[in-house]
Amino acid sequence: MTEKADLQSVLDRAAEGGRITPEEALDLYRDAPLHALGSAADAVRRRRYAGTEHIATYIIERNINYTNVCVTACKFCAFYAPPKATDKGWTRDLDDILRRCAETVELGGTQIMFQGGHHPDYGVEYYEKHFAAIKEAFPQLVIHSLGASEVEHMARISKVSAEEAITRIHAAGLDSFAGAGAELLPARPRKAIAPLKESGERWLEIMEAAHNLGVESTSTMLMGTGETNAERIEHLRMIRDVQDRTGGFRAFIPYTYQPENNHLKGRTQATLFEYLRMIAIARLFMDNIAHIQGSWLTTGKEVGQLSLHYGADDLGSIMLEENVVSSAGAKHRSNRMEIIDLIRKAGRVPAQRATTYEHLLVHDDPANDPVDERVMSHISSTAIEGGTAHPELKLLSAN
Ligand code: SF4
Image (cartoon, rainbow, N blue to C red; front, side, top):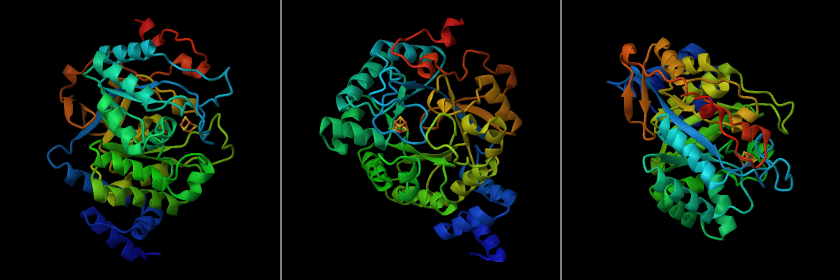
């Protein structure tokens, strides 16, 4: 363990942009004073974004959950239905998906997150068909979706390699991977919460293959299902090592486990302090990843605001629809005006961004703020109640 004086020198080195080892990261994560950690991470963020360090970004997107039927049965998941549970499983048809895309465009959304279970019938062809149809109808929408787990599953169903699956869905319209399914990459915690998922090494192998095929991604981490601090830092190390080779991870997004309606009863959640420490240590340790995203959906808006002072430069999306973490208890909702306001009250200038992080609209004058209460996060009644019907979304039926 690093002595106190040494801890400060490691923190100073990290704040100045020096690379720190996993062991040093663990010591800082565990023992550095919270505000000192945040201040060092903020120094790194400000230097990386010199000239635009006063800006914090958000994106408008919609999660489209195409099915909740899943053969993988992760223990932390409150969203899926096993294939045999025919009263609980549902799928959305293409018309419904395209209608949701149309609503997204109408509300100024720029990105679609296609997210769902590992359906036993959905191979590469399913995703090719749907991505091609979305791109044909809405070429302006960026399809930032799926992750290595879905690639592994669809490749198995279609009996092709992961590389072929990636190449084909990219050609059909997928722009980038969202990094879904990373959960916790080290073997022990991963097996404990997602025993049927591919290994962490395989998840990284597929993401590396995607980067090498020209498909960039974000990366994620699920915190709070019983993993140790050392396992959290190991997760960061595994991603940083791949990033050293590919440079294909655009962002790192930690989020906290939500404990309702799943099979991990009795597990503790990550505390908000642990979450803020993670945002800060990610900024310090992952010196090769440009963007660190704060997540207000699972931690709340105030913690989202604080994350902007602990190394985060982005607050992610105003999700016009979200059902997965909401099923597990995430209750925070927001609209565009609130997100703009909370970024401003955190001392930053808000900017709507593209998937690739270019600023689309900088809100530097409150007099010109967009006023549209429909641009807000929303849970679909279909996903929560189940069934194969496609009721009108309250989102638009209210207009
Ligand atoms: S997290 Fe994804 S893969 Fe795991 S059970 Fe839920 S829907 Fe299936």
